[in-house]
Image 1 (cartoon, rainbow, N blue to C red):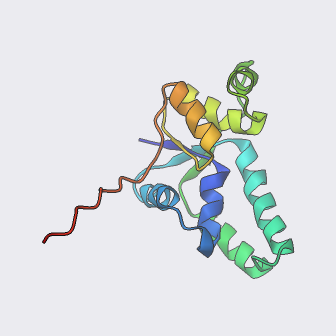
Image 2: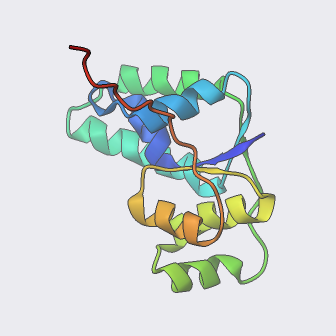
Length: 144
């Protein structure tokens, strides 16, 4: 089943020091499942990368390599939504319109949402959507 991918998860893939089990799990899912995203994602990920070039966290070469790898992943940029639903979701959940666009896409397609944004994740759950999350088994107590 496809899932909706937001920029917070994608950005975590770009930085070695931002490993996150949920982001890693979403990346692993792309081996067998396609992701859907909004047109904003294209701009947002590039903005994250260039801002981090300015902060000297990434080089231009690393950005180029990351974007090449990203282009090979099964991520479909969906058309802009129609109607007032994005604004309604932004108002109802006190989200940015950008985040509400990811929520609207997940809601309209009936697919889970991959996000590391806590507010967006809470809004998705309130809307009855599921989140893409790593299944981490609880640690067993040590044997005596």
